Image (cartoon, rainbow, N blue to C red; front, side, top):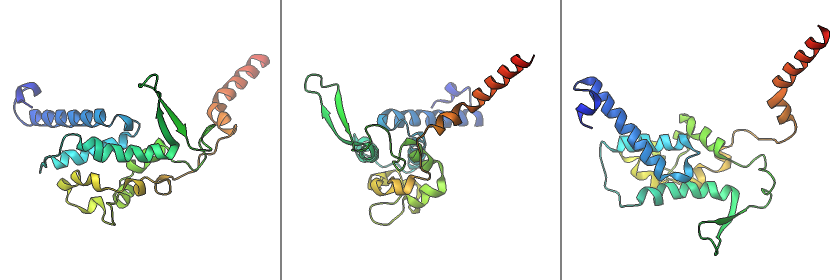
Length: 198
Protein backbone atom coordinates (compact mmCIF):
# COMPACT_ATOMS: atom_id res chain seq x y z
CA UNK A 1 0.00 0.00 0.00
CA UNK A 2 1.50 3.38 -0.93
CA UNK A 3 2.64 5.46 2.06
CA UNK A 4 0.66 8.50 0.85
CA UNK A 5 -2.61 6.58 1.39
CA UNK A 6 -1.65 5.96 5.01
CA UNK A 7 -0.85 9.55 5.87
CA UNK A 8 2.82 9.91 5.08
CA UNK A 9 6.04 8.06 5.78
CA UNK A 10 7.45 6.37 8.83
CA UNK A 11 6.35 3.79 11.32
CA UNK A 12 2.72 4.94 11.48
CA UNK A 13 2.38 4.54 7.71
CA UNK A 14 3.94 1.06 7.89
CA UNK A 15 1.47 0.03 10.61
CA UNK A 16 -1.42 1.46 8.62
CA UNK A 17 -0.27 -0.41 5.54
CA UNK A 18 -0.01 -3.68 7.49
CA UNK A 19 -3.48 -3.22 8.93
CA UNK A 20 -4.94 -2.51 5.49
CA UNK A 21 -3.37 -5.69 4.15
CA UNK A 22 -4.79 -7.68 7.08
CA UNK A 23 -8.29 -6.28 6.63
CA UNK A 24 -8.21 -6.77 2.87
CA UNK A 25 -7.04 -10.37 3.24
CA UNK A 26 -9.71 -11.10 5.87
CA UNK A 27 -12.41 -9.71 3.56
CA UNK A 28 -11.10 -11.84 0.70
CA UNK A 29 -11.21 -14.97 2.88
CA UNK A 30 -14.64 -14.02 4.24
CA UNK A 31 -16.01 -13.45 0.74
CA UNK A 32 -14.65 -16.69 -0.65
CA UNK A 33 -15.78 -18.76 2.33
CA UNK A 34 -19.40 -17.63 2.10
CA UNK A 35 -20.89 -20.78 3.62
CA UNK A 36 -18.60 -20.53 6.63
CA UNK A 37 -19.40 -16.95 7.62
CA UNK A 38 -20.97 -18.22 10.83
CA UNK A 39 -17.54 -19.56 11.84
CA UNK A 40 -15.56 -16.31 12.22
CA UNK A 41 -12.93 -17.92 14.45
CA UNK A 42 -12.10 -20.35 11.63
CA UNK A 43 -11.88 -17.46 9.18
CA UNK A 44 -9.51 -15.60 11.53
CA UNK A 45 -7.30 -18.69 11.73
CA UNK A 46 -7.20 -19.05 7.95
CA UNK A 47 -6.42 -15.34 7.58
CA UNK A 48 -3.54 -15.61 10.06
CA UNK A 49 -2.14 -18.64 8.23
CA UNK A 50 -2.42 -16.79 4.90
CA UNK A 51 -0.62 -13.74 6.33
CA UNK A 52 2.23 -15.93 7.57
CA UNK A 53 2.37 -17.70 4.21
CA UNK A 54 2.85 -14.35 2.47
CA UNK A 55 6.44 -14.35 3.78
CA UNK A 56 7.19 -17.37 1.57
CA UNK A 57 4.52 -17.28 -1.19
CA UNK A 58 3.56 -20.42 -3.09
CA UNK A 59 1.52 -20.18 -6.28
CA UNK A 60 -1.88 -21.88 -5.94
CA UNK A 61 -4.15 -22.69 -8.88
CA UNK A 62 -7.36 -20.73 -9.32
CA UNK A 63 -10.10 -22.09 -7.09
CA UNK A 64 -7.68 -23.91 -4.79
CA UNK A 65 -8.88 -22.22 -1.59
CA UNK A 66 -12.55 -22.81 -2.32
CA UNK A 67 -12.15 -26.45 -3.42
CA UNK A 68 -9.42 -27.62 -1.06
CA UNK A 69 -10.14 -25.68 2.14
CA UNK A 70 -13.65 -24.22 2.21
CA UNK A 71 -15.54 -27.12 0.64
CA UNK A 72 -14.11 -29.86 2.93
CA UNK A 73 -14.91 -27.80 6.04
CA UNK A 74 -18.41 -27.03 4.79
CA UNK A 75 -18.93 -30.72 3.99
CA UNK A 76 -18.34 -31.51 7.67
CA UNK A 77 -20.90 -28.84 8.65
CA UNK A 78 -23.37 -30.09 6.03
CA UNK A 79 -22.99 -33.75 7.04
CA UNK A 80 -23.80 -32.89 10.64
CA UNK A 81 -27.31 -31.72 9.70
CA UNK A 82 -28.31 -32.81 6.20
CA UNK A 83 -28.77 -36.03 4.30
CA UNK A 84 -28.81 -34.57 0.80
CA UNK A 85 -29.70 -31.56 -1.32
CA UNK A 86 -32.00 -31.72 -4.32
CA UNK A 87 -32.17 -28.90 -6.82
CA UNK A 88 -35.67 -27.81 -7.77
CA UNK A 89 -36.03 -28.48 -11.53
CA UNK A 90 -38.55 -25.63 -11.91
CA UNK A 91 -36.32 -23.04 -10.25
CA UNK A 92 -32.61 -23.91 -10.23
CA UNK A 93 -31.90 -21.18 -7.67
CA UNK A 94 -33.86 -23.08 -5.02
CA UNK A 95 -32.77 -26.25 -3.35
CA UNK A 96 -34.49 -28.70 -1.07
CA UNK A 97 -32.23 -29.77 1.76
CA UNK A 98 -33.24 -32.99 3.48
CA UNK A 99 -32.37 -33.06 7.17
CA UNK A 100 -31.03 -36.21 8.81
CA UNK A 101 -33.57 -38.36 10.64
CA UNK A 102 -34.29 -36.99 14.09
CA UNK A 103 -33.42 -33.39 13.22
CA UNK A 104 -36.78 -32.38 11.76
CA UNK A 105 -38.10 -30.79 14.96
CA UNK A 106 -34.99 -29.73 16.88
CA UNK A 107 -31.30 -30.52 17.21
CA UNK A 108 -30.45 -33.37 19.59
CA UNK A 109 -28.27 -32.43 22.55
CA UNK A 110 -25.13 -34.05 21.14
CA UNK A 111 -25.22 -32.52 17.64
CA UNK A 112 -22.32 -30.18 16.95
CA UNK A 113 -23.25 -26.74 15.63
CA UNK A 114 -21.60 -23.45 14.73
CA UNK A 115 -21.19 -22.49 18.40
CA UNK A 116 -19.18 -25.64 19.07
CA UNK A 117 -16.95 -25.15 16.02
CA UNK A 118 -16.36 -21.48 16.90
CA UNK A 119 -15.47 -22.49 20.45
CA UNK A 120 -13.03 -25.06 19.04
CA UNK A 121 -11.22 -22.43 16.95
CA UNK A 122 -11.38 -19.90 19.80
CA UNK A 123 -9.15 -21.99 22.06
CA UNK A 124 -5.62 -22.11 20.59
CA UNK A 125 -4.48 -24.99 22.78
CA UNK A 126 -7.30 -27.22 21.54
CA UNK A 127 -6.98 -26.52 17.83
CA UNK A 128 -3.18 -26.62 17.85
CA UNK A 129 -3.32 -30.12 19.31
CA UNK A 130 -6.26 -31.43 17.30
CA UNK A 131 -5.89 -30.10 13.76
CA UNK A 132 -4.15 -33.03 12.13
CA UNK A 133 -3.16 -33.73 8.57
CA UNK A 134 -4.22 -36.93 6.87
CA UNK A 135 -2.10 -39.37 8.80
CA UNK A 136 -1.02 -38.30 12.25
CA UNK A 137 1.11 -35.20 11.66
CA UNK A 138 -0.20 -32.01 13.23
CA UNK A 139 -0.60 -28.84 11.18
CA UNK A 140 1.09 -26.66 13.78
CA UNK A 141 4.20 -28.85 13.89
CA UNK A 142 5.02 -27.53 10.40
CA UNK A 143 6.91 -24.27 9.84
CA UNK A 144 4.57 -21.25 9.93
CA UNK A 145 4.95 -20.19 6.26
CA UNK A 146 3.99 -23.66 4.97
CA UNK A 147 0.83 -24.17 7.09
CA UNK A 148 -1.56 -22.36 4.74
CA UNK A 149 -0.61 -24.57 1.80
CA UNK A 150 -1.13 -27.64 3.98
CA UNK A 151 -4.74 -26.74 4.86
CA UNK A 152 -5.77 -28.91 1.92
CA UNK A 153 -4.22 -31.94 3.63
CA UNK A 154 -6.05 -31.46 6.94
CA UNK A 155 -8.44 -34.26 7.89
CA UNK A 156 -11.41 -31.98 8.64
CA UNK A 157 -13.80 -34.92 9.18
CA UNK A 158 -11.73 -36.08 12.13
CA UNK A 159 -10.79 -32.62 13.48
CA UNK A 160 -14.30 -31.17 13.45
CA UNK A 161 -16.18 -34.30 14.52
CA UNK A 162 -18.59 -33.71 17.37
CA UNK A 163 -16.50 -35.88 19.71
CA UNK A 164 -13.62 -33.40 19.25
CA UNK A 165 -15.55 -30.14 19.32
CA UNK A 166 -18.57 -30.67 21.57
CA UNK A 167 -17.85 -29.50 25.13
CA UNK A 168 -21.35 -29.42 26.57
CA UNK A 169 -24.82 -30.87 26.00
CA UNK A 170 -27.55 -28.53 24.87
CA UNK A 171 -30.72 -29.68 26.53
CA UNK A 172 -33.94 -28.13 25.26
CA UNK A 173 -36.75 -27.58 27.77
CA UNK A 174 -39.06 -24.92 29.15
CA UNK A 175 -36.39 -24.14 31.73
CA UNK A 176 -34.61 -22.21 28.95
CA UNK A 177 -37.55 -19.80 28.72
CA UNK A 178 -37.41 -19.14 32.44
CA UNK A 179 -33.63 -18.71 32.38
CA UNK A 180 -33.93 -16.18 29.57
CA UNK A 181 -36.71 -14.08 31.09
CA UNK A 182 -36.46 -14.48 34.87
CA UNK A 183 -35.04 -10.98 35.38
CA UNK A 184 -37.88 -9.41 33.43
CA UNK A 185 -40.44 -11.50 35.32
CA UNK A 186 -38.83 -10.55 38.65
CA UNK A 187 -38.81 -6.85 37.73
CA UNK A 188 -42.51 -6.99 36.76
CA UNK A 189 -43.39 -8.79 39.99
CA UNK A 190 -41.49 -6.23 42.11
CA UNK A 191 -43.12 -3.32 40.25
CA UNK A 192 -46.57 -4.90 40.64
CA UNK A 193 -46.21 -5.47 44.37
CA UNK A 194 -44.71 -2.00 44.82
CA UNK A 195 -47.70 -0.53 43.01
CA UNK A 196 -50.17 -2.57 45.07
CA UNK A 197 -48.52 -1.78 48.41
CA UNK A 198 -48.20 1.95 47.83
